[in-house]
Image (tube, rainbow, N blue to C red; front, side):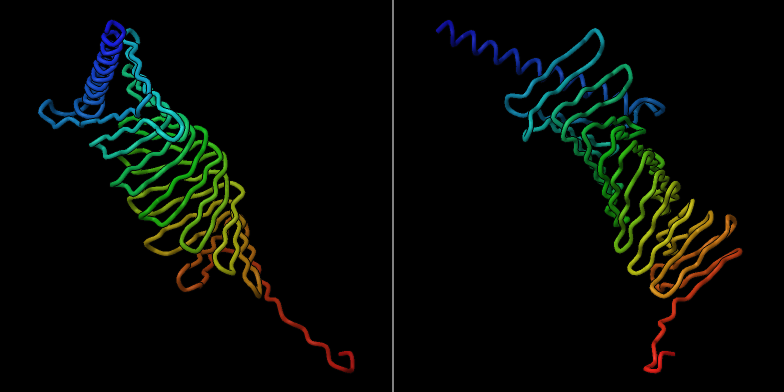
Length: 273
């Protein structure tokens, strides 16, 4: 009986600790998402933290840090109401002083309103910023794009803008783009890429120092000594040349000096000419 009573008491203590940690983190996010820079009567955001069976919850009240630990195949899950986000990871640490949430190992993040999904091994989340410091993969549902990052990725939540550095591979519905740096804006469905760029679309290939994309206009714009190739020829521009490629129609427009060459099939007559 004594052993059973001790075990029951231990379970109650664990449940109280998890409940206290949930309340602590909810209050922290209330200050993070609800009160800062807003009126007192603004509806504060809510957060729900789900720790799996045999998970771990730790509190550091002195340093104002809360740690949730799951395990492979059974991650900790976090749901935030505003801005709408979902997050899961094997380990999640919330730092109240720095107002940041750090997730590690098998991290999955989703922003429903923006149509974004991301996976990574490490992610930092605040009210204004989502960062993948060690790379990862991002799906843009509304833009029909998938981005694989080797370096750092940052998404600014209020502005719905993003930056990727250190190498990327981006694929659209029927095109691909590979390079070093990328800056985009979800509001106007556009991006600008730079650094060792290589672009493909069906039977077309392109290169340039800078390539910009606008979904609404359906264009890829190559600049900075651009090169544009197709099955039967190529265009080569100078430093000031701009090549505008229309994805839907396949038409090409150039501005500035260019060299153009067409490949012609040469036949051989029986007489050798």
